[in-house]
Image (tube, rainbow, N blue to C red):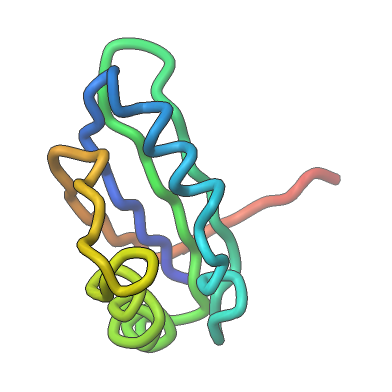
Length: 107
């Protein structure tokens, strides 16, 4: 079965729009990564300032290959034209990991 990675991003109210714009404009490299199965950006509706970035992968090895390849290059490289990287929209981040043990789809 697949594995799920949920990145919990603490995002102040004044940074929400910026975060969503950055995700909308992302290069899309994750969608072309071997073993990638699904992505969702979840906006909080009430009671929290934490966004959830949900990704599902065929295996831990596939996730690690993306983390150490395309993701690392995108997050550690310079900004547009090799300039300075923009300030992060999130003030904190925690990665949760899960193994899918059961799943269901609509009938």
